[in-house]
Length: 217
Image (cartoon, rainbow, N blue to C red; front, side, top):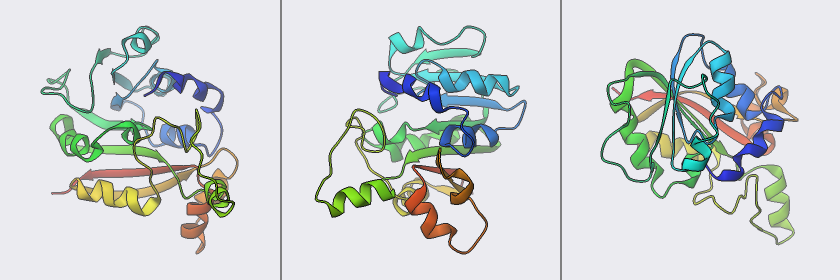
């Protein structure tokens, strides 16, 4: 996760937002591995839900800011390439990849390795920015596709995803998708509504793609 991830502090608790939706998917007592944990801004809230949290990140300066007592342990790891998992003796109920896969050179390779440290009935929860959001579509109509410092078109993103391509990513890595949600600070109530228009409306209005998956057996 890039250093500017601390910007999310202002939006973490917004109902219907990506991070708030992720938190609701974590049951109390879960053992959670937070991939790309940065300074621990999300893990702190995960801990408050009664979960045990371990964190991994490539940035040592960010790891230095992780709040003490909120994580069981943190370690530096380049998620693009590594031989062994830190905390290899641990198994996790949930592996959380919140807005991290789009920063990796080959995210499918990381996804394929996650079952190595997942409990037999564990889940993998992924969130990704939705490049099909209406704001990006309108910009394209006007002939603009400009990278920015933050947001969906963050210039540090190596990959761009829609709900369809996110499905292909997870399924291509041997995962079975069980649930899909959208994240939106403004329209969270709409993108996850149970009505026929949910699919196309979610693709337009959700800024975040959220998927819950398990290894295919």
